[in-house]
Every structure is written in C-alpha cells, then in structure tokens.
Image (cartoon, rainbow, N blue to C red; front, side, top):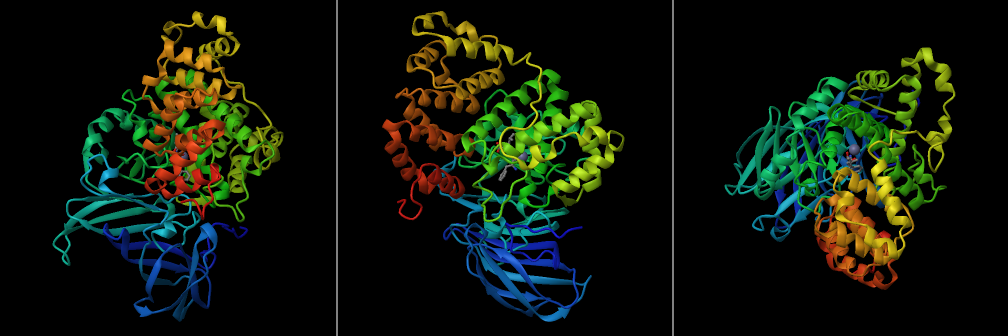
Length: 615
Ligand code: BES
Ligand code: ZN
C-alpha cells in the first residue's frame, strides 16, 4: 500500500506505531495545567531504529526516557496549528518488530487548545471549577505528547488526580478510584480503554459531576443541575443503541454514557468512546434533538471502529455516520422522516456552498489539507455531500437494505483500522462486483474532487417537507397588505422539525422585509421558543431582515452558549448588519476570554478581528 502522508502530523508513523498509552496526570486548577507523564508503548517498523518524532503543542517537556534509560530530546520550532515536533533519540538501536516504552514527563499550557478551564462562575453550580477537553481534530497534542494522527490506534490506561470534591471521567471504562497517596486533599480516578482507538478520541472532564442510570449500559453525567433533564431528554439511548447494533453489528465499547457539558462546549456532540460529550443546547425538553445522540452512537462504528486515515478523508467518518444516523431515524420514525431529514441536509449543503463560494476547494468531498488547519475548513460539506453520495449509491445499488449490507460489511472489513477514500471505493467495487457497470457510470471525480454542489441531485420524498415549503412560499410572496392573513393556526400542525425546516428555507432566500418578521413574531411567538435549533434560525432570520430588536437577543444567544454551529453564524449575521457591526465586535471582545479557544479563534476570523491586537 502507498505510504500515507498526514499533513496535520509530524509524528513518524511510517517508522513506528504507538500500541498503548499509559497516562498519569494531575489536574492543577490553580495554575490551569495538567502535569504528569505518559508512557507510550511503541512498536518498531524498521531496522536500525533509534529515533522517533511525537506531536506536541504548547507543552513543557521535562524529561524523556526509553525503557527506563534517559533519552535525548529536542523540541522543534512551532509550526502554526501543528505545534512543535518532539524529536527523541534513543540511547540504543532497535529492529523491526521490537517494542520500546517511551516515557515523557511534561506539563500542559494554561492556553492548551484541547482544554477549557472554567471558573466556578462559568458552571451551573457556581461553586467548583470545571475542566473539559476536545481533541478532535488535532488538539490531543496540546494535552498529551503522542502520534497525533488518526492513522495510528492504541489502547490506553489513565490515572488522574483531582481535588477530592471533583470527579474525573474519561473516554474509557471507569476502573476505580483511590485517595491520592501523595496528597490527602486529592483523589485518583483510574480508567482503561481496551479497544484500540486514535488519539483524537482521548477525552477528559473534571468537575462537580453527578450521574444517573438511563439504560443497561448507559448513564447521563453532568453537574447535578442538569442530570434529570438529561435523563429525560436521552431516554431513547438504549433503543438507539439496539437499533444501531441491528444495522451495523455488535457494540464493542462496553459502556455508552453521555455527558452534558457546560454551555461553552463548541460542538453539538463528540463521539468520545464509552462517553459521548454533548452540548446542553440539546436539552429541548421534548427529545426533538435526539438525532445528535443517534449520530454520536453511530460513530461507535463509523469513526471509532473504522477511522479516517487522515483528516482529508474526514467524510468517511461523518458521511457514513450521518447515513447511519438517518437509518436509525428511519427505523424509529419511518422512511418519510429519513427523506425529510435528507432534504434538510441538502439545504444545509447549499447554504455552505453558497457561504464558501461554489469554486472553493473547501467544498470538495475529499479535501487537501496541506498547510490548512482542519478547524478552519470545518463545515457540513463532509457530512451532507458524503450523505448525498451514499444515498445516491444506495439508489443505484438497490435500496436501503442492499446498501446497508455494504456499510455493515465495510465496517467488518475495516474495523480496528484506518482507511482512505481509495480503500473505501475499492471495497465498494469488490462488494458490488456484479454491479461494476453501474458504479463505473458514477462521476467519481465530480463527487470527490470537484467543488460546489454534487454532480447528481437526489430526489427525496417531500411529504413532510411540503407544508414547510408552502408556508415559506406564502411568507416570501406576501405583500405588507397580506400580513393580516397569517395566524397562529398556520403552524399548529407543524412539528418542531418542520419549524426548523420552514425557517431554514426562509434563511436561504433574500431577507424578508422587517414588517414580515415582526408580524411573524406576533402570530407565531418564536421569541419564546427555547429549542436551540429553532431559536438560532429565527434570530438569524430577524437579524438578516434588519429587525433591530433581535440584535441583543442574537448576541445573547451567541454568548450564553458556545456551540459553534450557532455562535458563529449569529455573530456573523449581526456583523453583516452594518449598523451593528461595531456592536458585534465589541460584544465578542467582551466575551472572548470566557469563550472556548477554538470558538474564539474562529469568531475572531469571521469578524476580522486582528488576532494580535484583538484586545
Ligand atoms: N465528531 C463530530 C464533532 C467534531 C468534528 C469535532 C470535527 C471536532 C472536529 C461530531 O460527531 C459531530 O459531527 N457533531 C455534530 C452532530 C450533528 C451532525 C448531528 C455537531 O456537533 O453538531
Ligand atoms: Zn459526527
């Protein structure tokens, strides 16, 4: 097989592979650092092996040893988002097939991009500090020196010492706790992850956590203020897990817990093994945002078992996961619901292509990340172009059952390994060897390596979307004199999913006149809806229509929670409302220090706030 280059990693994974990682850390809330050591069990792939390179970023390295003997090391210059290569020279030579234990003593930086340290004031309970990590895609190296590439998989064991009023949880099986023998004010929590996984799935939370059982293999974790809400919102977890198993094969990770994070968590969900992280903006009170759970559950197969070899093949993770997520939706709500969600996804793809520009290479399914920070080109493209391709293939190959057969077989074939788009495609052709003629007619280059909308537009069943389209049309066509014709009854029959779709349709159009959104508030009372997906789209619509009253509400939502899917467009839309451009920048600067560092970095770019003189 051709050697793979990972443009996002310095680690020498063609020479050696990490097989196991043993972490021993102390969380120091007063200086906001993690301190301790990692021991990497590394398998050698070449003869005359005597040096290796690890990824690090913003780490202080104190000491390196190999099999207990001191080793020379040097930290290279910092390369933007990639960090600094840690070059280690062993005091001996090894040959192919041998193993070496490389131990690094180190400390993280208070500004480590994987970690957010929250003050008590930033938590629900207001009494205790809180720490969470988010390693995907390239942030693990700010928390652990490692081969920070998804092409390498290893098991891990960890022990974390924390102040005894706090609890630590990780993306692994809990393995007990004990008083810290070196400090009576602290407790050590132990974890083991016996399934090999990539570094970006290492995750840690330390806080005043509680938990409640929600299923035979599931608990909800959060500060006590949200445990009951979480338990209610996520009751379908076991049903979804069983559905996913019937589609994709056995769940191999043992436990499937959920952890509801503080509001600054930058994503909707993160598929950390054994412990999915979710944003509190999923707590809608009616379970209507549970597709995010179906999505993160699906990653237990696509992403965590079969992993993209590099971030250029990220669509393999996300496209298949959206496909599985919607298959779970299909099993639980029916085919029409899946079709409806696919329509919504295609609309999001359109918005992204419009945002980037149809010639922007960031809208390719397979991207080129040479010199590109994956956080900066993150979008719904790998999700929705990926889904659209898989759905197109599903239709060509004979329908959902037939294509799910392929997806399941692909998972079995590549479980515990990392794959490229070419490997995926080769396997597709092998699996459907009787239908190669049809596969050969697919415009592969158009789908994978060409920007803009896909070369083929799937036709979805519009049964559930029709009502959304009709109502959106009425609003777009209405003259001021027609506004009295709208009433609360218009939306009586619409589900929250349909309201989201209705607003998404209007967001794709030219802005409505201010009079229209004011009337919409009068009749539909959207301002009092707290469902985050509805609220964000509604406030964006109002701001785009230049309704001044909506600006403070939009900025409030943009800062009270930090999910990038909401915070970035809300800030951007206020910024694009000329009269409030300075206000958007001012509010951002006021909140910047309490924001997650990745969110702050991206909002600063969106608002063209100079990184160096930003304060
Ligand atoms: N793995 C992603 C989140 C992610 C991607 C974090 C890239 C960092 C870098 C997660 O599974 C995800 O896709 N979350 C979505 C859920 C949605 C598609 C249902 C989100 O955060 O909104
Ligand atoms: Zn995902």
